[in-house]
Image (tube, rainbow, N blue to C red; front, top):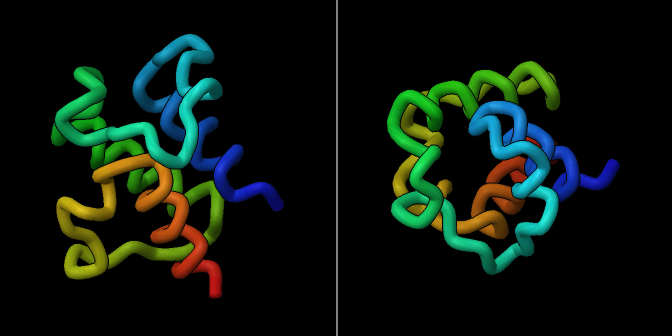
Length: 82
């Protein structure tokens, strides 16, 4: 499974980016850099990640660093899958 690709699909779906997220790389900043990623969108991304990957994300699992960049979000998901 290509975790980065799946995370980008989730971001693209939730944020309605029309495919733009597929051009993001691991260094692409998210929170504060992508205007569509507001607090409500973060909740949507979390819900869809849980659904797509089959894990549960607890409130204390996440902090601002989780959504700092595509890379930090991919690392978070990879960690939850271990």
